Image (cartoon, rainbow, N blue to C red):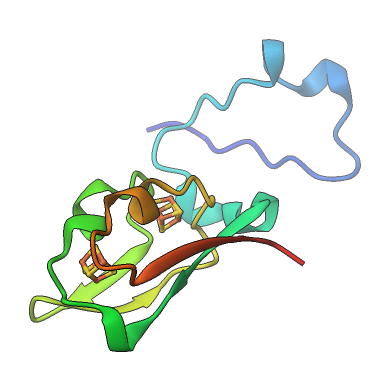
Length: 99
Ligand code: SF4
Ligand code: SF4
């Protein structure tokens, strides 16, 4: 079992892995990667047909679905890549710049 590295304000560059590589698998839950997002997908519920194409292509599993329907977006982890927006054929998603 790997030991997670605790990177904080006291961590020196000498303590970091070479190239700043993240060596521990399965660590996405530890970081709110959505904080780094420059673009944000906006979901228009009224236009959504719940085809789930967007859900299937999201690389971060940030589109939450239940009982075959989209229910919300996980903006804590959505990175704003826009793949979901490109996939939606019903104009139910729009990519806008973060404020
Ligand atoms: S691709 Fe568009 S229409 Fe289909 S579930 Fe996603 S937002 Fe809704
Ligand atoms: S913008 Fe990218 S990461 Fe965010 S919900 Fe869409 S596909 Fe997922």
